[in-house]
Length: 232
Image (cartoon, rainbow, N blue to C red; front, side, top):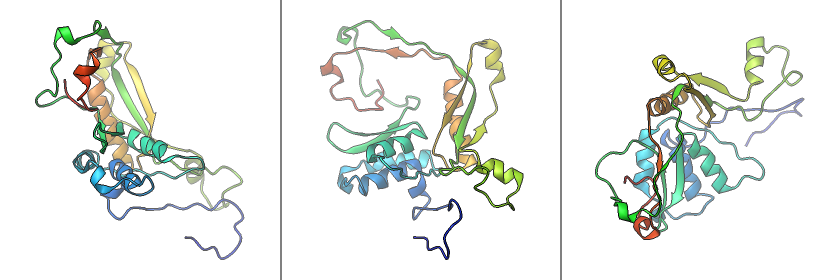
């Protein structure tokens, strides 16, 4: 709660730090607390190992301000999307979280040719040579007429932008090899420049290589036991 000594003449803004620990303020940490709190999911119905692993893999803070009309599910998805994660219920009903990473270890499923119900479908792929992420969202942007006269020009310009932007060094050689390589930029709820740079670099490392995306249609029986994020 904030108590004001007098009636404000304009917007009242604040930088708020929420969450008891640094882990609580990560994307996975926020989604887990939403699940345990307003979503009403019992602790034993949450995949603690998956959340702990993602907190360790993506340790940078995020920030989310609830808006009128927001649903819990939409808020969870928005926070998780900042690190390209997806919250979901496993087939056994346990609430979990995952994101796409390079496959490692043994396969969870091996698909034989006879188990495919259609031909392999090749998806278009264009590598990324330059990556940026928007971060540190200002949920209340302030323009001229909303700021005190003592606020300098640089601060005024900053307060008038919804996001800050972090670019990571481009893969210039890729642009020579692939003239059609693209720039990628996305808005996130990451709260710090360090977090945005780390996530942008992770995405660029993954997307700046040649890949062959495939869709493999298989019968429902074959895929029945596979969870999101499994390796095949």
